[in-house]
Structure formats: structure tokens, C-alpha cells
Image (cartoon, rainbow, N blue to C red; front, side):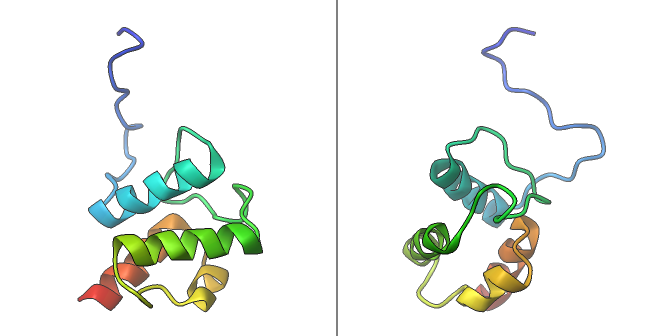
Length: 91
């Protein structure tokens, strides 16, 4: 495999949903990292109150206003949980 080919997900790793992919893109941009998984925690990656404000603003730009209440980020800051909260709010 060359370095230009995309890497396959780890065996047994669930595929990211479209919402999880969108949030992962935002996190990669905010944190300057290459890899984000569904189980990653916003605060464990380096998130703080200022990053949370930027994250929530980006979520509103991409999805809808008030689709992710700030308290949701603090209750369960895992990417998969936040994506599920957005999907539920958008349903």
C-alpha cells in the first residue's frame, strides 16, 4: 500500500455516520489532528470552553440553530453521542 491510498478502518470498527463524519471534520479543523473516531471525547482531545463555543457555532452553521444545546456537549462529549443528539434533534 502506498502512502497516498486511504487507510481502511480497523476491523470491527463501525463506519461513521454522515453526521459523525461532519463532526469529525469540524474536530479535525479545531484541534489540528488527522484522526478522529466515534468514541473520541471532545475534552480529551484538548477541548475547552473557548473551543466549545467555536464548535457549537460551526455545528449551527452546518446543521441548524440550536440543534445541539451546549449542555449536551458537557453531558456526553463523545463524537458518537453528539452526532446522535444532532440526528435526534433533526428528525
